[in-house]
Length: 267
Image: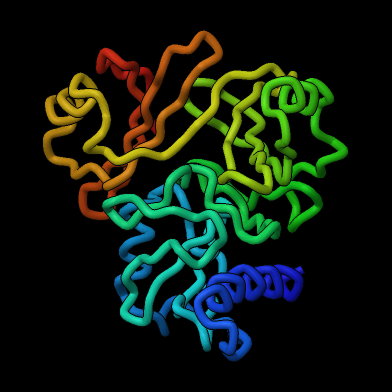
């Protein structure tokens, strides 16, 4: 499976390289360790993807992108030789002003290939979570029919590409699924174990959270530092909740708040 995904990454980055220079040499790559890449890469992941871990890193040759990093959330990130985020290594992938990728709560589209490494969920549940037959998780043919029906009815052109069991403090035991189409980035949806829709989720900058939420964090957790990115949940009734990732030394906390800044729960 890793060889198949490797080929998909190469194909995605090759499309970008060839679009700039039709005579470009074919993109080649080798898997490398986290310790061998610029420290800026794991630092960037820790700050912007605090609920994720690095699954695999490829060093690319003959490409504007030097490092292709896959997270265990199925997200694919691109970095230059110094470890600065690029995010342009995949067709259709955009960058925001902070160097982050739009829609990256569920990852950029990576050339049609999907590598599930397991959604880490803030470190509060064990094991890897991957679906679609990739490395465990919930096989696609075992997902409740109501989930597939919901995706078909509400996300035209999207397909489920992996799913996993998780525990979120505001919902309890859930099934999370990644869906995607060939034209857009992935989306993450959350269902209860009966297959009833609970929420969709997306990453956003902590600085872009409602003032009520950031003020509540500052008041209730004054000694903690908020990570650069948070997660927003849009619930079935269209209300919103926000998960904020906090750090104090080696202590990590995930706080879920309502729009008015009320703390719902924490992990």
